[in-house]
Image (cartoon, rainbow, N blue to C red):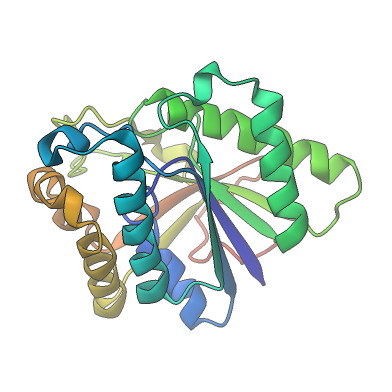
Length: 238
């Protein structure tokens, strides 16, 4: 089965579902990654004394390292304006996303939920574009598209993400449709992927993301409701 993850920035996959991506690859699925920008506008560039263009080059090299570590089936990094997706005609973003989906023909697409986890506008644009493209392509006869999922964080009592200093957003427990358990191998892969982003080393340490993710990853599934939640995004496809 083919699974395509679509995110706006470099490191979105590693601060997010890299461990699940590794597990899916290990289970024999093809896993692809499309990133819309090269992330050059990040504030980290000021600490490094780099221009936007120079930061783009650095972050692209870091993404290539992630591709090798994960052993992705394929990866494409576009050069749309980082922190500027909200200023674009959304139809232009939809067009490039459609082209990539048409090339890969995935059964499952994964992107951000409506709150974008961080609330960052590029993440919000990504959710809207991903949902619209999935629905439009599905209704236009692209029957290979079976499921749209959103990587998210749970809004549950005792969650390590609750009241987080980074002001992360959460999904209500009743909307969680898939919980993927992570073993030691998957957690180690998450650490290896994050370590590829040397320019974000201080952010990774400050956020404590590795410890907070723990041993589970959470997903919403659009227009499907699973109680109890699935333990695999590829389960019970229509």
